[in-house]
Length: 325
Image: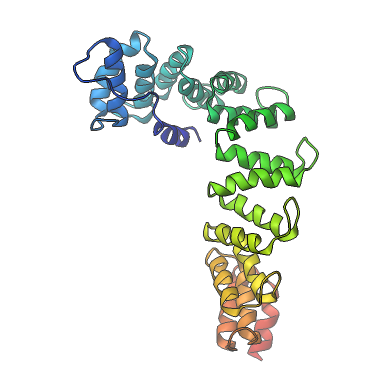
């Protein structure tokens, strides 16, 4: 988990950009070290970043400490050494770097290059969260929700998630939707859940698009609106949410909230089938078997029924037996 987050967060950078040409004080070299590491304004050059950052890191410059930690963590230019990387990250954290605090927390949380220590990890996350880092706020929320590093604190978790979600943090918006949708430590509130799912859906999260579509379909947390339901379920399905594709297939096959439409039913069932959904394979078999919405084709029906059986759908066995007779 930590390595993935480092790769993602590294793209954010730490500062505004490289120093102006002609400046060569320690602060300017500190900026250039970071610029060479990220390739911001100059061609990316980890070796040059290392040469500039190494002496400055020892002098206590947090940016250069982060560069050194990142180089050591990823094994760029120098031999990979997570323990040494943690040392640099924690020094940057002491110097006020919220990214250093976040990375230190991640390494302690997962025991990555350092002994696992959930309590210390939470301490680092809280420092970064107080500095406004949304990823750290999210991790504070997760740990308080699970009771890791501290006692479970549903209210504290929600507060932390809200701080991050207010900055557009996608995972925190999803977490809040799930909390209010399931009533995790708070009274269930489907309208509040739908509000957070909408924000996450607008950012392209397929799971949230699916749940928002269901909210509109059932009128649970949102006004019942089949056009909105179809729109969000379609976006979720195109984003890989198999349940959304299957449900759309059912809607078009049965005329639930939309006009019956064979080609549309086939489209969504096929999309879900491509994702391994045995229900949709059976449904495709049934459509070709019944010959109601699409031309009857018993051989095509058998093909889909057999695929459904291979993927665990037992109901298709009876249909295959009948057709084979």
